Amino acid sequence: MYGFVASGGSERIVTSLRVQPRHRDTVRAVADVLADTSEGPTIEVLHGRRRVDLPRELAALLLSVARAAASGEDVAVTVAQPQDREEELTSQQVADLLNVSRPYVVKLARRGVLPHRMVGNRHRFNACDALAYKASEERRREEMLAGIASADGYSPEDF
Image (tube, rainbow, N blue to C red; front, side, top):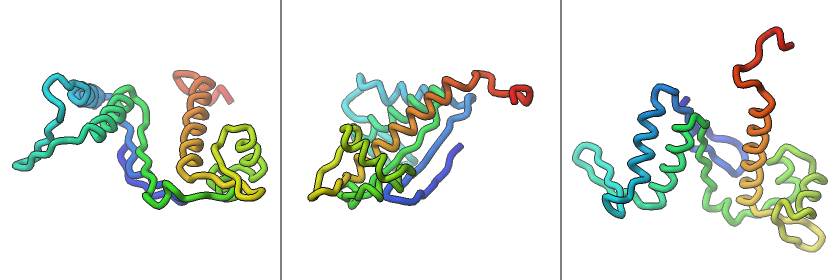
């Protein structure tokens, strides 16, 4: 599955993908090339007559994506907009982002789970911290659901 999606809020999913099983060997080969630094410090990308050296940071990101995709995981790349990196959110805005109640967000902050700062008696949250927490909770939830569901799926008799 390849797709481009723009979501609400301050995050943007640039692309998401699920590699079909028949293409996983090819993606593993790409990961092997990206991981192999024995041929030099840079990776050269060729397209027709154009030649570009891939920066190490981009190669590292692509390697992570390729490894995850080759193992059958769904992959989504989320980009925080430059203005979002320093954007501060109120507890209500974080609650809306996470789809939870405002008191629950305050509880997360007081327990030290969600980084914040105090402005008077009000909590302020960095947008990137809130997005990172959201992503980690989504991963945790998916792992828990995968552990509950049977490997071969459900049949109508299960219900």
